[in-house]
Image 1: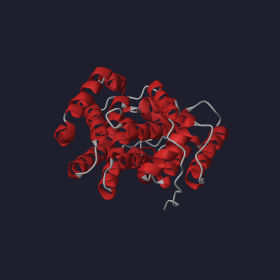
Image 2: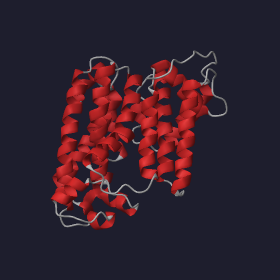
Image 3: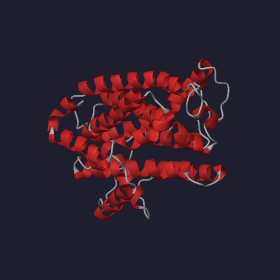
Image 4: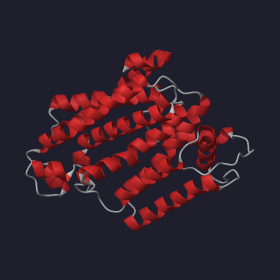
Length: 304
């Protein structure tokens, strides 16, 4: 449970918001324009959440040695602790100041920030290779669902409904990424496909490149895709039942990723084609999806 936050009187610095927005835009996020749909205040909070996630993700995926990665992630843990414990406005870093304001305005849960860091630590501890199904779901919760739980508070969703959307949609998106990016992850020494599925396919190796080019890789992806499809279905049901808040950014993410998911399914989850599928939804198509949902206003459920 979060410690109570003491209200601070420092003004919300517009320059800080601009700095964080520039950081997000320069990162080239596919969902920059989805976040732009929100009011300036909510948009600033979403940008800050994204910037935090991008910074810790860059640490985990960067070229540093594992020990230095873990040290930098530990420093981020300390920064999050300070945002919840300090009674004064942070100094020196625009992102910290906007995060502090967002925590105060939307009641962001400290546990979700820490979960994101823990997910990055899983990658930084050494390449993940053939986790158990339970370990994979825990990883998905940390790196995706926890991010969603932060965002739905900004969207204004009720606690239970928002958490249900986040938990299922986060897992659906992350499983889609894992299925799509098996070859790219293998090049980084990572293998997120669960060992339970590898064993059922008769694959004993946990070497990422060996598994990525195994004859039955398509069947393994198809088996994991069943779980992703179930998560998409539960997320859709939860979104339709969410009658408060503005969930349009979540709808955009679901529509975009489900389209990617369906194209992979149509292709038979063939590894050699995944790079083409990854490019299949170009910027114009994503903008069209965002515009369609944005113009729907409060009737965004019709876009699901």
